[in-house]
Image 1 (cartoon, rainbow, N blue to C red):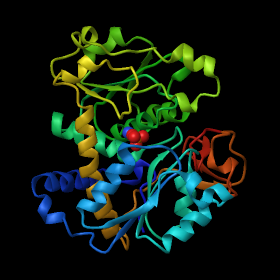
Image 2 (cartoon, rainbow, N blue to C red; image 1 turned 45 degrees about the vertical axis):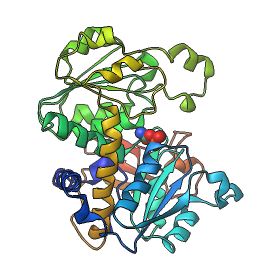
Image 3 (cartoon, helix red, strand yellow; image 1 turned 120 degrees about the vertical axis):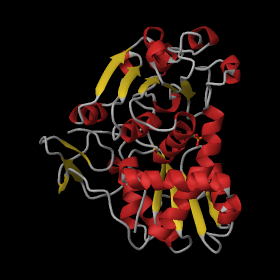
Image 4 (cartoon, rainbow, N blue to C red; image 1 turned 180 degrees about the vertical axis):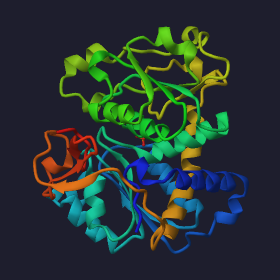
Length: 354
Ligand code: CP
């Protein structure tokens, strides 16, 4: 059985296959409108969502399947103390595939250990968001034709912005990518991701200036400062307006640069920019539905087979994760760690280096 927890669970060939299926769905949607007839998708959303939950639902409906689930954990038995493990055991009796969003880093990894149906990570804490990355990849593919040799600037909250983490990992498998990470000092990318990029030998720079670098970018990936992840409100208030993309800044970008944003936006892109043909963030939403259709359809087919992406780490037991927002801090789970070829260890659930 296959899950999608981290974007690197998919081989590059599988990502290409999903992109091709999504393109075919765009061209001939009628070919797909009954392929999931009789199947049920459960959307288990422990955290708010507009795009991801509703596009998963729309995707399953357009494949001819049905949808059940909850959009507020307080209205489910989670409010009575039910664990992730028990919840997904129950849901496995009721649905054929699960899409889970959770406020704790790593929760879908725990779900996958107890579910008997495929689990899709629909966003876990500030860790990963692989289906947003698939939407981002489809948008880049449709706008740019491919992924090699792109200079990609990520701007805003790179610490808590889970879409940044997944998209960086996805792009890290293509040739000639240059990363420009633009953030305040306090919101730089997590150490485990920096380690990943360095191990792969990619060119990257970290800066606090969008103005200095916008002219070099093929893709500008803007992000919201993630208010809900801050422990310190004063810090959030100080950082919340760090970057605001306006028409003046856009004038310094390449004519074929594209602007991505996973949304929701607060004020980091002014509304006038929406009318610039380089702004792609509403296209990303539509592409998100098509790629989720391709993903649900494929995961249900891959259930009984298909190759797993080989990993370069060994899973070892024992120890404690220091990340208080890791699912291992609240759910009784086996303490597991990834032992890298470099000798470094990171939490199996949330990737925090130990
Ligand atoms: N991009 C994204 O994850 O949006 P939602 O939080 O609305 O699902």
